[in-house]
Every structure is written in structure tokens, then in C-alpha cells.
Length: 414
Image 1 (cartoon, one colour):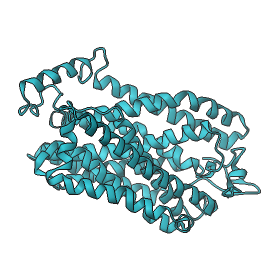
Image 2: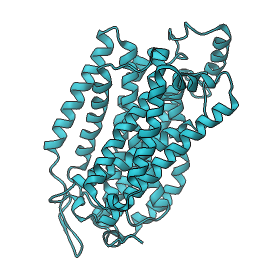
Image 3: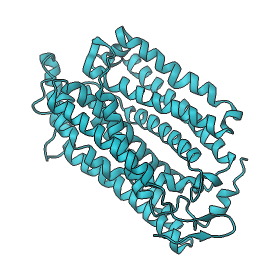
Image 4: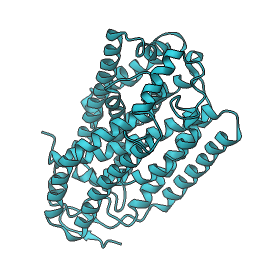
């Protein structure tokens, strides 16, 4: 365990208060995960349970990878204002190896999710022409073989290998800096981050293709990865805001965070609310203008019939409402109110993923509810949160010996 650190700007010891949160998080996660898997193997609602698990999994893993990309961006930009917040981002991204294990149930569920998976019966309604197109895609990309191009299993090893290496490399340097101090580890992080960023961007893009876009294998969008990334990035800033507001007390970094930091977090939430809407509209506009038979039905299903009301609601609830609220400078200087907005946006992000995934299951039957939507969400989330708290135990919640920590703590909004 690291020794206490006392200096002119902080008096912190290692964080030891995790059991009261970690144990309940693991308990909820394990129980909900068992209920979800039990529902899949023991009931006839295998399609509902599989799609619910996919929503929960992509929700939480997207946020964890977003935290990793966020670190790399800020190291590359040599940003100093958020150094006081960095340890939370490092811990959240270090959870990524857990998601590799949590991705394994998707293998058992794959035939109920993906029409291109061998043995899937989801192609029964396909025409001969659609089956021919699907066969072409299976040969080139959508396959689970150990072949070239790499099958989905090999690609997943690459995805999680890149993410885990980058996340644990950055975190290990940061933890070493807590004891040794100096500028060397900061230099290493700033040299490493620009080089790894392109690989992080490519892997999250192709992962979104594999997990979400391939639910409808005859549909494609080159900016789908950016859409998924934008929503995950917004959710990551929301979680960072909530955690910072809640991290008050002995050895918790929230007590030294200034209103200027919250103002910046609020502005980033506003920026990514607008960015998500921009990417969503861009994707829709390109598909609508092209009007290609393979692409148009994906939006046609969501624009007409039972899904139309949810599509319209997303425009107002995911963009217009939070955008209008977050324009307020006064709100962004009130951390607790900002945290409530962040919590709202986290719920809307889950609805957005439901809107992406569930139509592949129910089609023109429209939105439905299944209990596994809740158990899968809290199952994956509980395990992820519990492991994050486990990683935080015994370490500072603040990067106490970063050479720029004092400058971050003195940060004033320009």
C-alpha cells in the first residue's frame, strides 16, 4: 500500500473505503448476471435475453474504452486542467480485461443475434438474393473462422489486446509516479498516447461493426463507429461528473476539485451532446439521399410504424432537451444539478442503444420490454463497477506526484 502524501496542496492517503461499495456492486452484478444467463439457457426467450445482454455489454464496455481514448487525447494535447480527474479515468479504463470475459456469453448467444453466424436461423426470411449478398460478406469479413481476413474471434482478441495494453501501460506509469515522482512518467505518457490513438480509434470502430452494425448484416454505414463512440464518450463524461461530485470525504479527490473543473465537464457534455446529434443526422442524411435498397430499410423500420415515436423522442430527449439545459453557464457551476443532468443522459444513452439493437429482434412489432434488459444492464455494470472499486483500493484517488498537479488544482476558467 502506498504511504500518505502530505505537501502544500494536498493531504491524501490511499483509498481504503471500497468494501462498503465494492461488495454490493459485485453482489448485484453476479446475481443479475446469473439471472440473465439463467433466463437465456432455461427459458424460450433466448432472442430477448441475447439482445438484452448485448445492450448491457456494449453500454458499459463503450464507456470504459471511451475513458481510455479520453486519456490518450488529453495526454496528446498536454492538457493540465483535468490531471486532478485523471485517476478516475485510469481506473475505469483498467476494467477492460473484465469485459473480455464478459464478452464470452455472446459466443453462446451469437446464433440468436447475428444472421451471419454459422447455424443461425435468423436468415429464414431472407430472399435468395439477400442470402447471396450475405454469403459474400461472410466470406470476406463476417465469419467466425481462424482465417484471413481475421474472423470475429481473432478480431476480439486484437481489440481487447490493444485496449488492455494501452490502459494498463498508462495506468502503471501513473501509479509509479505516485511513489517516485518526477517528469519521466509524464513524458512517457505523452509520447505513448499519440502513437496508440489511431489503433484505439480503429479497434472501437470495428468492434462497433461486429457487435452492433452486423445485427443487420446487409446494412452498412461508414460512420457507425463514430456514432457509437460519440454516445459512449458522452456517457463517460457523465460518469466522470457523477463520480467527482460523489467523491467527497477523506482521501477522495472530489473535495479538491474546483467549480472551474465542473464548468469544463459541463461544456464537454454539451459538446458531445451536439456531436452525437451531428453524427446521427449525418448518418441518416447520407442513407436517405443514397436511398440504396440494402441501406434504406434500416431507417425505414425506425422512421415508420411502431418505432417512429421512439425515433422522434430520441431527437428531443437525447439532443434538444439536454442541449438547451447545458447551455446554461449557471447550471454548469452547480455540481449537484450537473450530476442530475449527467444521470439523465446516462439513461438516454441506454435508450439509444435499445433503439439500435431491439428493432433487429422485434422488427415491425415495435418496442417491447423484457426483464433481462434490467438484469443484463445491472449484471454487466455491477461487475464492472465492483472491479473498478477493487482496482482503486490501496491507491490514491489523486495523481499526487504528477509535476502539474498543483497547476491543475489552481486551474481557473479562462
